[in-house]
Length: 364
Ligand SMILES: [Mg+2]
Image 1: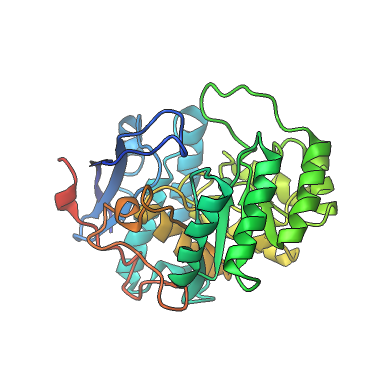
Image 2 (image 1 turned 90 degrees about the vertical axis):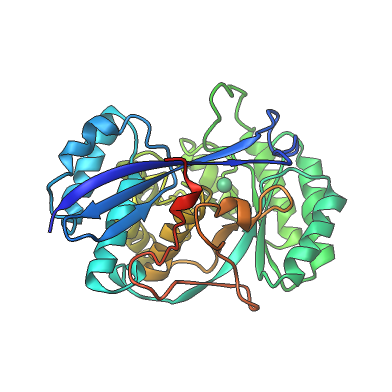
């Protein structure tokens, strides 16, 4: 079998209403996504998405005519390209979709088949006043989520503590809550200084009162001693969602800087490398549960890897209505992914990723 064609299909969803200022100082009015479609000479089609494929075209010839099943070869090739250009992991996702379809099994089975469903955590993107976030979170709980993560303002620790206390009071003691300070990577042009490690430790200690399951990216990943000191303040530390190489991931595990490893398979180092990282982390009694914040196909790829390797205990489910809804997130799919009544996100049982990709939604 050979890879006969690699197509890049652009899709755009107008955002009306747009992303509000609670999300991003620059309002966003559209959501763009590119789907990678791999077609074999036997007519099997696989789909991937999640990161930009800008600049990929000159490299397509490195894959055309190759056996789609030779995934290690393709991953190594993508890593050589990543040094010179972009990280084109959506192509790896599409190849796994092909492999699963050829073999007639879900991709999660190829990654170990440890679970068929994972409890989802509702993951927020807006920074809201404490009362508003607490009210929203009662809706999240009532919708069936067992867990949720709240994005907090890095420049307002008092507000963050108020928010976590208010949410805990509103949702009760049962729900698992996490908090994210987003200090490990920057949007282009953001050169503000990092948070003060001593203040972060005091903040982490204060969060214990709200029973916070993990604090995410409280400091830059370069500050390994600082991250370990936050852990010593009594809260699990999560990070690694957007590292750029496999060696960074290996180094994080070797230095035991984190309790929760979160490399997004669509954005960080791909699916195969994420599996290796997950096995190393799990062997050291740490957690593996990736960032999933791209689009529905990216979420699905992360779900298959996490369920396959036995990650968890929760999987990120980007959800912050009315701005970020499953319908917007998954506009590439004919139906959005959603949790069941117990808050579980199920691995589709169809071969491959099990994605119902709706090609009519892309401008071709
Ligand atoms: Mg995060």
